[in-house]
Length: 267
Image (cartoon, rainbow, N blue to C red; front, side, top):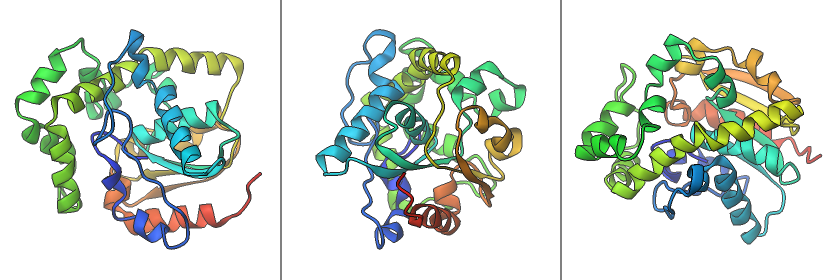
């Protein structure tokens, strides 16, 4: 599962290689890419990670998979986190890439994180402030947002980047992205609080990957934070990249995912 503001082509450099050994299913998350973009609903619930996780479970069931491995980056990793909690019988193994649980982030806001991840606070502003500002020049905005490092946009596949931009030109996509973040700061956070109070953690085997030079790698300690939210962390590793791990370090991402998913422990 991909992150913001991408679609399934975010996995273009990794998925075809994994597909030589596994059946790979890569979707556009609800609201992103060419997927449907429903109204947000009360408390933005239709863009909650619970709703997005349910989408993925239903897709897999329709394709004949009742139990499966899953990997997610950025927003896709947050969907996977919720999927592991809501559907533990479905997810056999989970690989979470370059996130810290949002429950922790919102309860431990730092200047470094807020500066690097400014869009978290921009996207949650009431409709239609962020929508109008991003939609005024969507190509400029997406290029500016994605060019976070000295590499600029050079590591993105040109065809994939063009498709990300195509999708982002759609005002409905921009609104859906804002609804995703608004849900994250409201209904999703309420669900997280319920899980924390109940001691509910991810209990399937978990792989953590993050970019050594990204916000997670520079500003957080994944192996210290994640045990509060997961009980079976098999490994954690920093890869030579910034935030966009599967685009910047596809070889290393493929190697780590392949090794983790080849372990046929389907407990």
